[in-house]
Length: 148
Image 1 (spheres, helix red, strand yellow):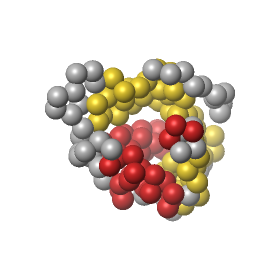
Image 2: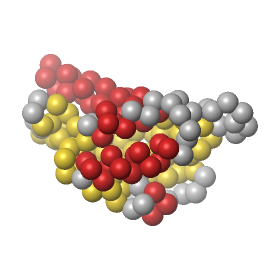
Image 3: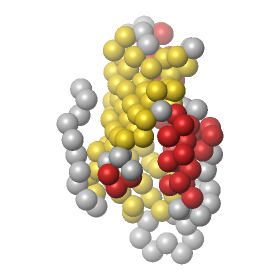
């Protein structure tokens, strides 16, 4: 593994961590800018089906964020990254997701457990999310085939 490979892996880790910080903090503009213009989010019918393109991604995240009533009332904990560089400007990754509701007065903080299944692209020197699929494990199991 080269130094450039190690830097790419760290940039992708940071990208996915920023996704969680921006989502949880209600920063929809910054969140949407983590995606390529032609990105696709595959979250299933319970979340509006496929969101295609950065504009649709922005609008859908704004809608879902509005349900939580403010910044840091939910927390996306992403763990166990498995990132594979497939070329100089492409990579795949999987992350475990523990999605928690942490608003004051919440009795049960567990929202869902899942696995993010991602494709990344490097555009203009920046790693971005090109495609993400969420495989749901709990409370309702809805899993497709993994990309790789």
